[in-house]
Length: 170
Image (cartoon, rainbow, N blue to C red):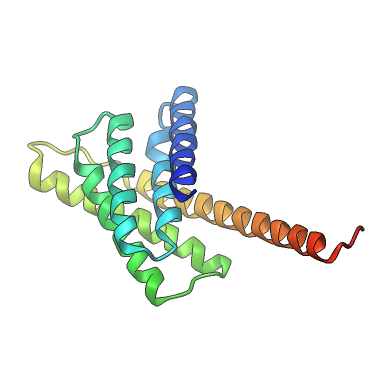
């Protein structure tokens, strides 16, 4: 079931990313919906699964973005693993904490991409600082909205199960 939800999450993120770039060419500078999906799935604290989720998400992002293949794979793998390890140590449920986790994950990814680009590519063109800030904040807000939506859906499902168990019709 988890693999199906992961696949659907990546498919939805990829479709939204492609639609955004089609509508607004600078969309990819301000939003990284694949990273949102990667961090969302890595937040459960399973480090080994996060490695696979991060590498799959990074390869998908590289395929969609048209950049050097492998840089996003490495960066997203490290971001997912780091997120999972932090999630093992800390329980982050408050909205401010969730926003911080997604924002820091985006910041770490951008720093890794810049460092890898400077190390391995002959010429690197980094995005302007306002685009980097916008991307980190948009990733944080998108992750927060996704987490809040998941909590609300889980709450509704549990309430429905409880009503069915007790036979209450309201």
